[in-house]
Image (cartoon, rainbow, N blue to C red; front, top):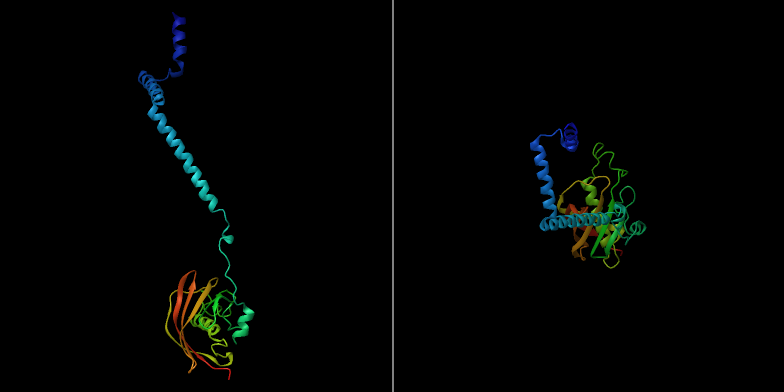
Length: 226
């Protein structure tokens, strides 16, 4: 009798510390799991979920592979249509007032797009301002006028670098501050030319990162080579 009781105790030993209700619930759960795993509908849903998980992982990995190109290789450099040496041949300005570093689009007598690389080494930053370096608005206008000079100082236009003057501005607005590290991109377009009086009216827009930071109308007075 004692041996039979001992054998029963050994058989029940894995769940001997559980109450009869827990034993019954465990048996029910095992039966339920077996029944669910044998269900064709549940098996199909599990396969579908597994496949979608694999597809999502694949799409995530493919998206991340597109972003593997280093940021320094994603953006092309500005082209050079007129370099700084050619600019110096056209404009009379010199340091510290030559404010155009390169021309990236040029249509003599019609329009030009020039760039000014704004750096902390520019001579105006120590005074404007020591704690917050911002390019002065008047120098932005001057840089744009110099791009306008590149448009107009051409033989076919009749301008002369010895008698070319900034005659006036109108409707100038400063939209955003230009700070050290920015690249100022300036487009100047001829609107009206009164060659008899040597007066040219131009429209100018300056951009940083594709956003307009300054725009206005410019009046140029030109001499001639005679």
